[in-house]
Amino acid sequence: MQIIPPEWMREKTTVEEIGRDWSARRKKHDWWCPSPPEWNREWESFLGTLREGGDLFRFSSHPNGWPEGAKDEGYVIVRDGVQVRAIYWVGEQSDYSLKT
Image 1 (tube, rainbow, N blue to C red):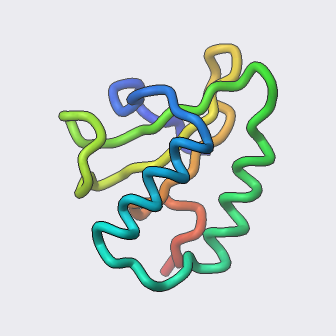
Image 2: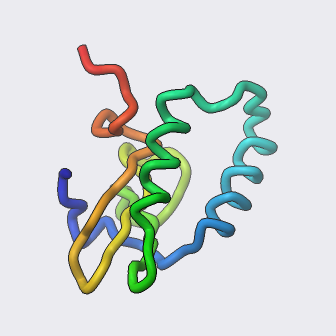
């Protein structure tokens, strides 16, 4: 797993907050198509890594926090101060993006 730079780490979040954020973005941008199956599989696997004692954080490469349009955005699970798993939903580092 690629380690997320500490300066990219943003606020702590929950799965429920992520769902609300995604719903708002879908509505704002009129996203009508479902997520690709590869991404859904990766997301389910990512959530399977979230256990008691782990914290879920947003990350963004944008210097001003969590704006839309950052080059890299996603979520990271941290357990006992150690990054356990990250998922990019924007950026070429995403586990689900097609590799050429």
